[in-house]
Image (cartoon, rainbow, N blue to C red; front, side, top):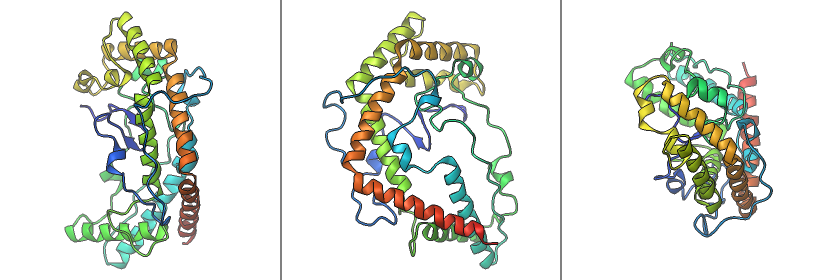
Length: 303
């Protein structure tokens, strides 16, 4: 499949119905938040529809916002943390005698972080790029990281330096590859609730209405992800006329059935329940994020 195809997009996650990330992170513990237990994952989807509030009409990704957003780093914060880590790694590598320039990190793209949370929602974008999404431009990773020693010894040292930097930013004496952070914890909660929402009868019914609408337009897909991930789109690096036509029909049907509105209401309800059940752990997440950003700012402020 072409690299630019989006597969069940969820910012910072790779969601797949057959293998939810939540299962792999079942025993996660917050870094710097000792004693925080795993989230309550009992009575998930399949136990009947969750109670929801009013369903708003959603016609744009700009309308998508979720309760757990408040516990995630913003793109700007994530970049600042990465820049601080880059600086620490470069200093560590220099101290070890290796040539190591910090990579050039592009500024985060503007717009809503949930731009394709529910697949394509913008009719203009659907007609322009189909399911491929915006074209990938700019220098590749290797070009951005020019000036770094590529020897095996340097790469091994870099791995150790990254762990040292992560430990410092997370307020720990040391970290290894298996250690998790508050980001991993929030990612787990988000994925679990997203999976529950997709299996909730209210969303399943909305998917069926969308599918009927697509059938009337001459396209046979059970749900939006089946259209989004049609293997046919991976045969071309750019969207074909057929892909753009189906993506446009997809958006039209989402609007006609208010699929995104129902989906948002249901997922929001699950996240609100998660907030109530994990209030203590989530308070620690906020504190962890504040502490990490303070440490990152301290690192970046030094010459």
